[in-house]
Image (cartoon, rainbow, N blue to C red; front, top):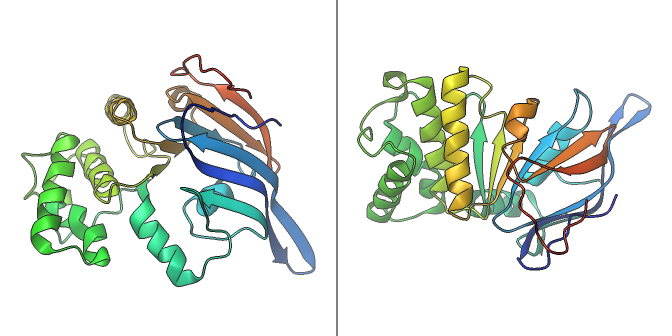
Length: 246
């Protein structure tokens, strides 16, 4: 497979012949088997694949929750493949934003306090943290709900709060794992509209989904099969780009 290469913008994610093996008894399972691709800053990608294809393992590597057995993973130009646990934690905190299917908000905290959590772990001063959290919530349309707790919000509002939390550390990549999986179709469209807006504002988005309709909202669709990149396709938001191949 040829990398999807765009020469006009900075490459922020690059996988180079990445393998991830697990030992199950005496059997070596190749969850990923020679994955290579790269993603430009400001682009919007969807990752698809059947159960057992390796997409969850790939997401764990992209999110610095795991390390490859072989190969290299460059995030923002830094090879994070062999970093220590503490260093990987620092990368997750400062360079990545996560949006999950189940929101993962802390029920005892307001959504403003939830949004501040990543900054608390970075040691950001409380006044600065509070202001950045307010700005992030306003950006996703929740500026008038900052004092509400998660159980006082609809599912769509909770997912917007989760997106605000993912954005508050100004990540270089926003990772979303089935972000519409717990939402009805109308609310799911609203969340995808929000991702469209974030992409238009310059965010780099990588979204994992099983839904072709969701994937088609992206510029590029990377299909994983049997631990390999099966193919890269243009999504519904793809625009003609000089030098792009798939």
